[in-house]
Image (spheres, rainbow, N blue to C red):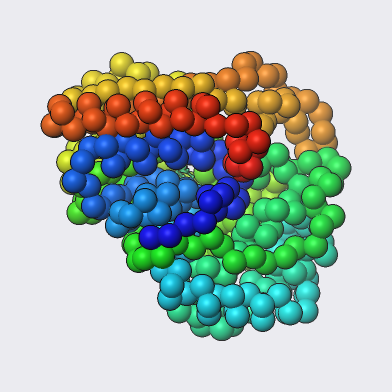
Length: 374
Ligand SMILES: C[S@@+](CC[C@H](N)C(=O)[O-])C[C@H]1O[C@@H](n2cnc3c(N)ncnc32)[C@H](O)[C@@H]1O
């Protein structure tokens, strides 16, 4: 596997709960268990973690039940750079020449709502239609869609979630949308779009679990990406112009009362011997609840660290008219990593490796950390 230095910083959609700052400790823990060849990421989101594990030489399966996240997984985890980088580069160069043509996306997300400037919306519409018209092989289609999603994200006008957009246009939204080749990794992996409970049965040595931890659904927060990938022109509602299925989407992981049962069901079905679980101290499960649940699978070790909270919390919460509607409570939260294995020596090795990686990350120069994007 090969990866250029800094490549991980190029995986750029802004995503709540993205684990960019924890990549080192997570990879170190996974490898620290010892004799690990296959990993499965059951809630893969941006696929940053699966991508980092693949770059570290593991065979990775990444799963997420949303279509845009499964597309990121097909690009970063499943697609082999050696096979697809060349064709993808040629395809992106052709797509970049597509004449802009405003359609559903421009109307819904750039005029009725204001996530992107209409000029860029017309580019998105035209390129997305061109991708659909080509009948591409799945890997190439996923790379093109990822490139388009990331291009749109670089010129959006939000704080990083799509529950609202900024009152005035963000400065970056004035830049023209441009496609770049996603930072692919050599080797093949697997991408799934299943409920985590089903994906838990994938054959692997280590399972990584990073479930949603509060009431905000990822479908609601990233509905524009879901529509861009599904390209199904759904009916929308409200100021944020969300897909109408956001109203009926019910996920137990977003429910304070149902998450414990939902996560316990996934944990029980995990086929892998070792587990790594991420959970925030702001989530709907306490450290003690998680430790008790995970103890069913063996010895449990817990590591935690402080992180700056997401940008909405940094600057206050605003409604679409730019009025401050939420108060900043505190600016740091603690991310916990739970390491679990029936083999005590293995979990102790994983813990030591993750601690070393935390220490190394904490001493990285600020200039290197500033290159990371969330
Ligand atoms: C905290 S995020 C994961 C972030 C990811 N580790 C990263 O670094 O980008 C949780 C993810 O779980 C997905 N998800 C929520 N419920 C799920 C379920 N029942 N089955 C599979 N995926 C689910 C969401 O779509 C979201 O992408």
